[in-house]
Image 1 (tube, helix red, strand yellow):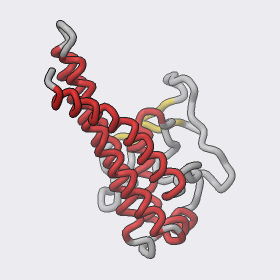
Image 2: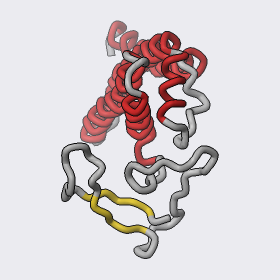
Image 3: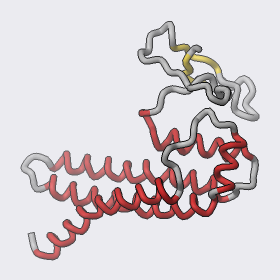
Image 4: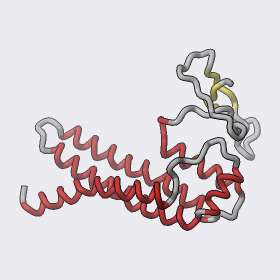
Length: 193
């Protein structure tokens, strides 16, 4: 490996540390998303948070977005090192593709939070939906399944999810919660309460 290639790979590898630093600084102290807001908050409370901290959220999400872009360069460095191992060419390609998807997985919720902070004086329900969507995309499969569509727990009431998925606890229900799609045949998995 020549000297320039070695230096470039080191820069890309160290960009992983820069990602963690920028992501945490933008997400935590600047935007104020740690601890995350309660999923039981009303739409008005969520919209008030975005209205009161609009500039902080915009700057914090911008810093976070810059950090998220560095995941791509870190992924390239890891893939380059994997490619050096005999018989790991396929794994290097797989790692490169999954790293690109990870970059997108980080960027999409940040863009959704940016959109929610773009017009904080709008309809509180839309701001709350953007916030919910961003958290669900960000947390992905780590999230428990929500309750019935369109139903939020009362303030102070925790969300409940089943620890095990037995047929008696999980049911498939038709959802008519989509505006303009009354009687929609789409199905959603919900837990019985």
